[in-house]
Image (tube, rainbow, N blue to C red; front, side, top):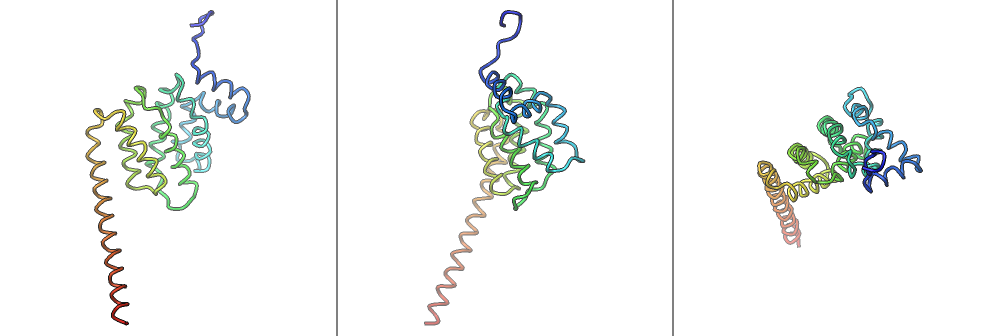
Length: 200
C-alpha cells in the first residue's frame, strides 16, 4: 500500500483512470463499469429494447481494459450471466441487424477476456455457450466462438475434458457435411459435362 493506506494501482488501472479523466467516451464507459450489477440488469431485462442493449454491449466492448484490472472478477460475476442470457435469448441472424450486432458485441467481449485463473470457474459455462453458438450462429459469430474454444482448450484443457467430445462431434459433423456437399457438387458437374458431350 502507498503512504496513507491506499493500495497501489496497477498499470492497466492507472491507464484506465487517465483515459476516463480526459476522454468523454471513457468517462461514460467508466460510469458503466463502476456499477456492474446495475448495468448488467439492462442486458437481463426483457423489457429493454435491443438497441439499448446493443449500446451498452458496445460501450462495454470499447472499455474492455477494465478486465485487466482488479475488477475482473466482479465484472465476470455481474456480466457473465447477462452475456449468457443474451446469447441464449436472441436468435442467430443471417442479416446485419441489431440482434446480430448485439450477439457479435457480446462474443467480442468474451473473446477479449484474459484466460487466467480468474475466469477458470466460468470456463465450463463459457465452453458450452460457445459450442452452442458455433453450431447455430452465422459464420462471423461462429468464427469468434471457435477462437474462444481454442483459447479455452489451450489454457484449461484438463478442466475441460468433458467438453472435448461435443466439440469433436461437431467437427466430424461439419466434415461429413463438407464431404457430402463436395460429392454432390462434382456429381452435378459430371452430369453437365456428360450432357454437353452427348449433344455434340
